Length: 173
Image (cartoon, rainbow, N blue to C red; front, side):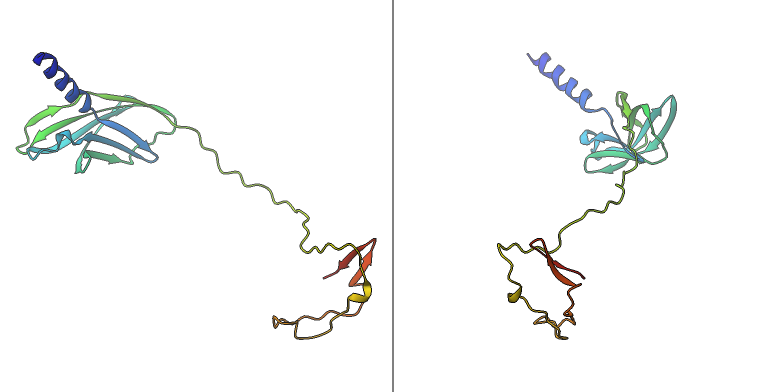
């Protein structure tokens, strides 16, 4: 029973000690979980390979663990990225190394935003429905005060500007 327990614990440590690989254009982010944040860890070197080109970088300690970020890569299509981490103690001696993590990054092609062409749509900007129209109830207002809002408005007593036709009232600007 103890052997099974220690095997599961060891397996859990090995599985959780892999480097996570994230790419949010233009930044490639490699993270080693906080399992390796003890005080005797001096630094972590991330080794990564993109399409058979090997590179490496020094990680920094963050709350989630150790992390390395770079924008020195351009992943525009399907790329295979693999990474591992080499952990050194405070004296600079090799402490541990992780298993290699591999991830196939497939980026969706993003096209430019399509802007719709301008369209002119007719719209009613004023409407008043009534059953009957009594022309005697209406009068033309010729004033400079514009009613109660203080705007300068002038309406002329001209049948070309305000008229009725087929039961509709038309007001021309």
